[in-house]
Length: 114
Length: 115
Image (cartoon, rainbow over all chains, first blue to last red; front, top):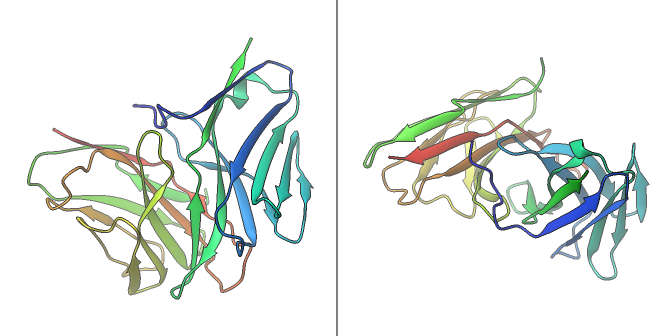
């Protein structure tokens, strides 16, 4: 199937190196953030989340950092592997009069070089 | 398996034709969402529903319609009024309770192409 995100910013890293993917969010009132991984032609997969009362959260080979002062979120992937090649995007939790909603960033394409 | 099932995976629409994309979830989630994804852009919200028999327009609802007759089902109809429907469509769901920290989960998506 056609690949989405044809014109996304791309981060190329060598296999085994660490990757850092950045995201700027828009709403200072957002209190919950999620990182997703999306492989070509597939739906986004949950990677890791973080609440606004935390600055850092670690998972298996991934770490999310939150800087509320500058409204910045980053995803760090340790020892990047070929299977990590995908589009990564962040989501910030939002609310309106109706209920919970999310705002998604455009994404970054991670390309792992052998 | 628990999750969100979208069908069909690929769909072709002729000019002036309405088509319906199916979305079913067995996660017992209250909230369901439809997003459109175009190259180089983030996900854009079409419609969402927090409870059965109720739904709200998202940012790009024009040319689309939905129904929420059952908790587990949230079909999206792309009508002939949608002038540029070729895109990747994603259905999602979340617990939907009025508290933060409810993760949103996605289906595998449906590709719609106008022929």
